[in-house]
Every structure is written in structure tokens, then in C-alpha cells.
Length: 253
Ligand SMILES: Nc1ncnc2c1ncn2[C@@H]1O[C@H](COP(=O)(O)OP(=O)(O)O)[C@@H](O)[C@H]1O
Ligand SMILES: [Mg+2]
Image 1 (tube, rainbow, N blue to C red):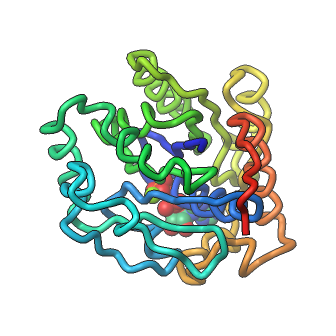
Image 2 (tube, rainbow, N blue to C red):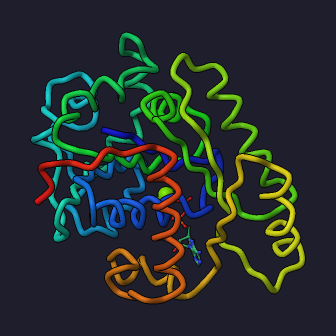
């Protein structure tokens, strides 16, 4: 099982959009679990999964609710979701009260390690204990960067958090929500991948097709196959796949 955290300290940068589409792309080849860690439950909503965790996230973290009982299947083969509900607002406190408080998510995930090849973590923004846990559990952290003079700060913050970890993931960033009509965006596309080894040469454009995901409530590959947007997320998955070295499952249906 390989775990990929889609993470940034910033909100509204395209984390959920990337997480949902990466999970769907991965599910074309692998058994995939998308864990929605954000109390806003955006990926839960997009994938049409009931936003209710029996006993709340507290009982999941404390091992009182089995992962299997909380995980929901989606309408897509090989793609399951561990939904977020409003109890996730208290996840930081739950983690803080637990033993080995930065290792809890990794521990909980161990129980499904044989059932999934890929786990995608859709993280909330902020440098919280949830983030530390997600980065500790992850083999790879994927960071969307919206081009701006400050965008590199969020990447630096991710690097700071993982520098303190005893199980640091690999990290890469990609440019997200890029509007080529804007000079700042064009120059970021030019310079960031060249100047920063962690920034891959892949640009997710700002488009209506991608924005529509919230109303279509489906991965882009489903409602807009063959578009540039669909191709970009397929390529993003290829980067993730080769960076995280997911092994092919013999048991894929
Ligand atoms: N490439 C894009 N083009 C247009 N709209 C986008 C794009 N990426 C994200 N959005 C929109 O921006 C908002 C925030 O994106 P989201 O993926 O939810 O970010 P985050 O999870 O980082 O908060 C959503 O309404 C989403 O539909
Ligand atoms: Mg989100």
C-alpha cells in the first residue's frame, strides 16, 4: 500500500480537485481508498458518499470503529471513500489526546493495508496535528501551488513540517489554477519548475471544466473525458505513480 497526501498549508488551492481526480485515475489500475480528512467534506460530497462516520472520527482513531465499517464504496469500481463528517472538526483534539499523537493516522491505516494499493489523503489546510499525521503516514506529499509571489512559502512550510518527522515523505509540487492571461502566472510557469527541483513540469490550468466538478459531482475523467483537464490529471497520476512506486495488485477486479 502506498499513501499519498494531497496537502498545502493553504486552502482553496486545488487539493480536493487533485485528490479526487488522482484517486479516480489510480482506480483505473489499482484498489484505491480516498480518505477525506477535511470537515468540509468536499471530496465526500463530490463522490456522492454519505457524510456520516458511526461514532465519529474519535471512535475511528481510538480503534472503536473498524475502518471497514466506516469506509464506503463509490459508484466507481476499485474506488472507496472514508468520508468526513462534522466530527472531523475535532480531529486535532482527538489526535492530541492519543498516544503517539503524530502516528495515529498511519496506525489506523495499517488495518486496511492489505485491502488497498493506493491511499489518497485529502487534507485540510493548515499546519495542524492532522497535517503532521497525514505527512507521517504518507510515502509521498503532493502540494498544489497557485502561482503568486507567496506560493513558495506554502511549499517551504510543508518542508519545515516534514523536516521534523521521523518518517518524511517525498514531496513534489505542481502549479494549480494557472491563468496564462496573468503575467505572474506565466512567469511562475516559466521559472518555478526550473528553479525548484520539487516543482514538477505540470500545469493544471484554471478552467471551467475543472470548476464544474462540484456541480457534476464526478471525477473529470467521467464527465469530461478527452479534455485537456482530464489529460492533465492523468499525467499528474503518472508522476505520482512513478514517484511513489505503487506495486500492481494481483487482486484487482
Ligand atoms: N484548475 C481549476 N480551475 C478552475 N477552478 C478550480 C480549479 N481547481 C480548483 N478549482 C475550484 O476552486 C475551488 C477550490 O478548489 P479545491 O480543490 O476545493 O481546493 P482546496 O481543497 O485546496 O481547498 C473549488 O471551487 C474548485 O472547483
Ligand atoms: Mg479541500
